[in-house]
Each structure stands twice: as structure tokens, then as C-alpha cells.
Length: 240
Image 1 (cartoon, helix red, strand yellow):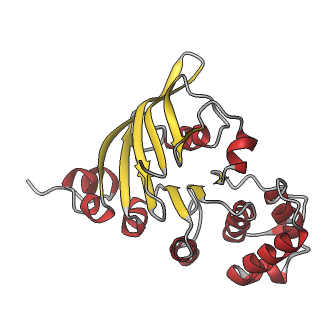
Image 2 (tube, one colour; image 1 turned 60 degrees about the vertical axis):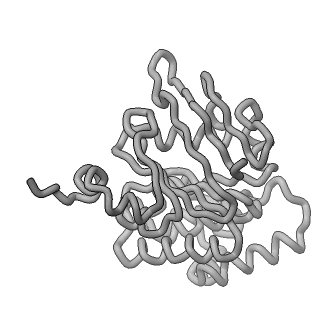
Image 3 (tube, rainbow, N blue to C red; image 1 turned 60 degrees about the horizontal axis):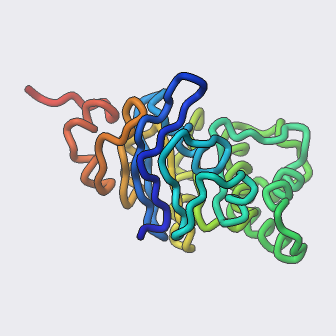
């Protein structure tokens, strides 16, 4: 059994089905990407895995335990952290205050301080401006803080939703290098990313989601070489 298994997931907003049977798995220690066009159901899938949405049907199993009926705080306590699309920081709170919110389920103050120092080592600009309000930061700096906040819960599974959105190429490289570093430290990463080229190059495995369904899967390298993926998501026309 895989570390995370999502089976025939169906999720609806009222009468509208946003996810219509998504199935994928994530092995422990992997980086796995979900790619697809806007509105394909990728963000809805992550929100359902983290407990923010309840599925109509299907199963989500984490390390052998079904979690699809659990509330979000229970899923967080089991080691699933979600850095959402748009970062969702508290703009009027400082860097330190935002990071502490990521550790709200913990009561080990020494460990919290140690993990905060780790985040500052990973993203030095956050340490330099730890008492500044998050709303004063650039998009790239806010993304660093959003990832740092998610890491403060010491997740076994880190879910990142569009971490490169709106960032410069240099900052995008920094974020993806950080994902690779986290993987080397043992964190499993589930990535939703519009930048399909970067996501596939980084991923051990990847899935294409189209109109709420899983339509293709393979290693990152296999999907990079797939003409259907190249034409639809990499901006490369297939020669006739």
C-alpha cells in the first residue's frame, strides 16, 4: 500500500462536480505532481485531502488509515500540511506570528523555536525580517513564508498548491530547489503546479488531471516526453 492513496474521488460544489473520479498514489519520500489546465480539479483535490472539503464518494487513505471523513485539524495532526494557492497569510501579523500559527497543534516550545531557526536558515530573508508584517513582503517572500508556516507542523506529507504562481524565474528556481531539499530530508511532497515543465522535471511521478479525472500518469521524465503532454501543457506543438 502506498503512503497516500486517493481512490475514485468525487467532490462537488452544490450540484457541480469539480472532481469526477480522481485516482492517484504517493509513495513515501517522493515528489508527486498533479498537472492540468485551470479548473481541472487539482486545487479541489488538495483541499479534500487536507479535510477542507468533504468528498461525495471515494477514499483517501494515509499510511493505511482512511482520512476522508476526518476534520482538517485531525488530518493535520496526522502529518499532512497544506500550503494553499494564494498563500493565505495573515498580512497584519509578523513573520514569527505566521510561523507560530503553523505550529498551533504543538506545545513543545523548544522544538518550535528550533524549527523556526531551521526556516530562517532555509529562507534567510525571513530571519532578517522576522518582526515585519507579512503584508509588506514581495510575492516570493510571501511564498517562502507560506511554505515555512506549513513546515512548522513537521509534516510527513507537504502539499503545495501553485507555489510558483506570480513569481520571477529566479524566485521560482529557489522555490523548486527548496522542494528538492525538503525531499532529501525525508519529506513527501504532493505538488500542484501550473508550470508543468518545472514540476515534471522535479517529480518522481506525476498525474494529469483533466475535467476532474485522472487521464495520464507516469514518471516525470515519461510525461515530459509524452507528445500529448507536450502539446497540451508544455507549449510544444506535435509535428505532423
